[in-house]
Length: 253
Image (cartoon, rainbow, N blue to C red):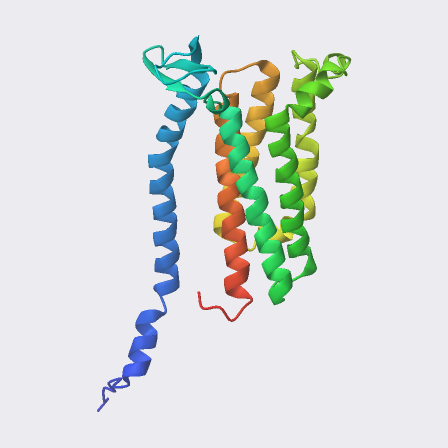
């Protein structure tokens, strides 16, 4: 007569129930990312719309306590008006530059910490974060100082090389795609170790390409795509850095 054997080992039962926890945790993380994207994208779009429609309607000593210098009255969405300091006029490019500066210093932090604690899986991982630091720093400086516009003004022949570019500086933005793709190809194995980082980097690259083409065609979605690209890039860098720190150190996850 067959007998039934009951598993009375609590440790074994706990192990069986916990086997599916990583899958559940991963699914929960992706669901939270999707919800955050659905909630944040419209907010980001509205913010970019406000920045892109901002116009200075009046300048001067507009308030009783403002003397000896000028402030701006700015109108957004053709309806709402508010006062701002001249150095703080709303700008999509300026906001994007702040995000890029954040990317640069987050990358610098990961590079220094991984090197100091010897927790990087390969030297290439540290090189990735150093390249991110220098690349993001350059693009942030470009956004603030208008480097590619200055170069374009002195290289007007570029419009004959890139027919879709209405301005020579638009052609330079398209050329930025070349080092970006080379960077992705060289560090491909470093990028694909984290699924969430891969997703963020793919969206960032696609948005950057759309922004570059939109800039060349003078489409109104350029600033929006640039900001979304930078936000996805900073999310990808953080995801990748935390993945390596948790996987290759004794720091508890």
